[in-house]
Length: 596
Image 1 (tube, rainbow, N blue to C red):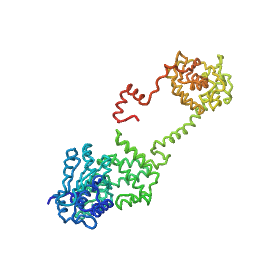
Image 2 (image 1 turned 120 degrees about the vertical axis):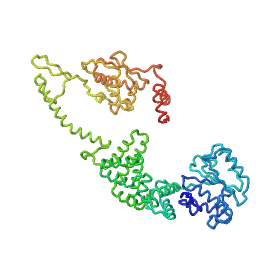
Image 3 (image 1 turned 180 degrees about the vertical axis):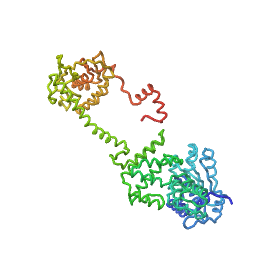
Image 4 (image 1 turned 45 degrees about the horizontal axis):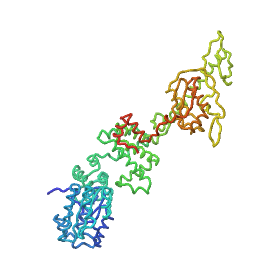
């Protein structure tokens, strides 16, 4: 006896046997009963959910000579027998995936002119209609606009968005739903009972989840599992045959993560990878598991679980032990891993780091010897700094005592709290050893102080009330353009909040050395030049202090017309970068980037 796969053997032959599309089949039956038929229908939805099957059942019911009161085909009349025996001249099927040219459509349209010999309608079923070429669509459109009264078109597609809007607007649209896990399990039970195959419900749940909403896929996997299990489909054999990671692994990982046992999770991960499982699939499966645990935590969302009854109870039990914050954070971490997995050059390391982060979510920050997440490094460094502060303080006290001892011998007052003199005059006595002369500093000890003498001018603008007095440091060190730019940027970053606006604008200015040690700053507009002139003394004082050169002079001037370059757009700047560095162009092509 010829073997027939379950997907064909148990293909529905009536509306009532279609699984998971009750609302849609009811609408079609009502249309048959009332005789109110459209001239074109569009069946769309994912693969393996019954689009072509429903199209055939509908076509048979339309031409049935004695339809039942429920709108089903009788199966006894000549039209039904001809359809069942595949000799009907009233029902035509076209696979648009392989017959998508203009000639194929024109040949089909020629057949629409001939009225049916038996029955009322000629029904044309065009499968995968989105594969038609644009020219074929245009050729089909004219007939679809004004079809003969005896013609009905049924179009089936998995990608409705690829069909021309002018075609869609002339059809009644039926959206098929994905199969739920429960519906799939129930149908597989029916098939197993008829085939005399024993099964475990958990094994059928694994098959249903693997099918991902497609009944045809579920029946194909069922046949594979039945062949492997020799008529006794068990959970362990199914996960072995389908190479699916046991759900116990996911429950175990979450339990270990709650106990912060990252090492045990690494061992479990290694065992899974050694068996040939992909790390990315493990993270995806674990994320789905955490989602199910989160759904099981609230009675209102338990119904969203698509799994067997036993697994549902396990989800509920684990949900009682998992804090909601832990589940949210774990989902966020694993989603980030899923996004970056394909681009990662070291995928195993990425998976390991992800699982370690999940294992540290509930970890106390100050657990001795425990690993730390990046967000906890700050507290770690603070702890180290606190531990080092007593040592630094002791070193400073010791240094201060040594200095006090030396200064007492050289005649300098010993009071450490007394104000420091502006200049330290070294002793000329040959009897006392010279102490190292500290570097002379500007009286204004920092950029904050350099900008302290500020007042509010008209309209709230800040400016210096008086010129900053620059004291002689006695230093005349050399500096270059690089040193100047470094000090300039550091000065802009340290400016007080009152000068935030000026700081942001002068940060983009480039000071240059005209004739050492003279510094010139060219400003491109008069308003900014006025603002900088108000704090010129403080800027100069800062440059003298940080560059350690008393001879520095600061010149500010407005840029000449020829010195002001054209303001480039982002695209012009990008083109300029490409001209200077071809590697950027290669990177753009490699990552398929575009400037928006």
